[in-house]
Amino acid sequence: MPSVVGLLEQRELAARRRVEELREEADRIQAELAVAERDWQEWVISRSRVGEVLAPAKEMEQGHAQAVPIASAAEGQAGQTSSAPEAAKPKSQVPVWHEGLAWTALSVDYQRILTALVDRHRLHQGPLTCQEMVATFGMDVVPARVEALRSKAKRLVARGWLAEPAPGRFTLAAGVVVPGGGS
Image (cartoon, rainbow, N blue to C red; front, side, top):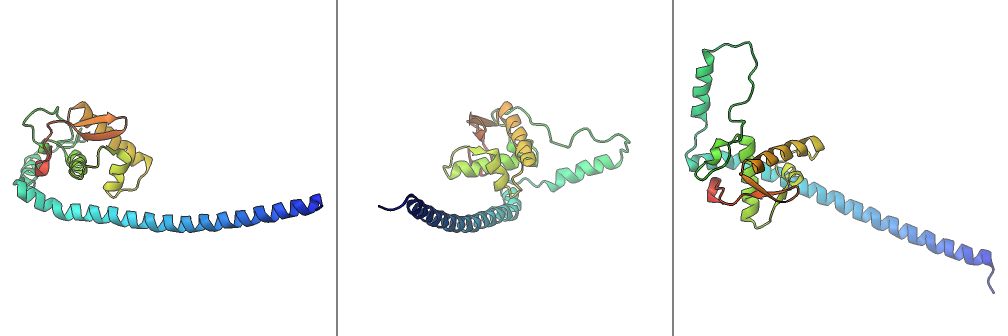
């Protein structure tokens, strides 16, 4: 009959081998995760850059040259000198959506959210979380950016541009038409 100490040593040796196997597997998985995260970040950056390159082309397709209104607004403000800081950026307020209201009534940040949701809709991928939007835009996924985007998305929901079918998940509201004819 084997001794108790001998049995304990056998079990300890088996446990040590199992721990070593699990550590090796964890190291392998950690390495795979690092590669996958790097690849994912490269795709996010690539998508962002493609969006930046294609943005002027989309504006030209829609006939919305933004330079003219900005220049005329700047000329109008050149004659006015005020010591008070501006209360709000131009077009920073979100109008209540109604049939026929163009997406260009929104500021660029809000248009960007709508465009991301249109892309998501076209790919049949369902609602989008704010964390996913931040990553899609190529920004660092940090709480401050996520909450800033959540605030904008909630404002779009309140004004009828977006729907929130589940808490924290956003999609286009029924009837909203945005660049490229998506609805």
